[in-house]
Amino acid sequence: MSLNIKKVIKEHGLEVREVAKRMGITPTGLSQHINGNPSVEVLERISNAIGCDISELFERPNSDTTVLTCPKCGTKLKVTELKD
Image 1 (cartoon, rainbow, N blue to C red):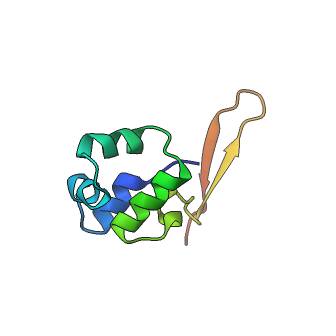
Image 2: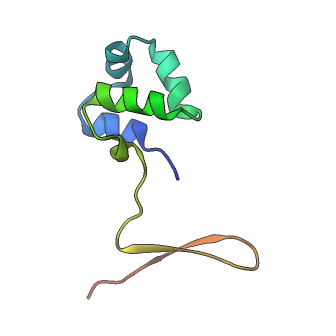
């Protein structure tokens, strides 16, 4: 599952440096968490600083898109339903 932290920060009208300030850490420290593998505790701190639910930090598949994995090569294929 992928993280959406930068996207959520922007959606809430914030910048990384503002979220870092609210968390009491440097923007570089927050960037390391965003680009690394943050713990649940860090994700909770980030969501609290943004003012969002922790679930918003995780990428959700588009409801109109299904991802299939090729059983032979492992390639992920996105299948989107066409609307009339």
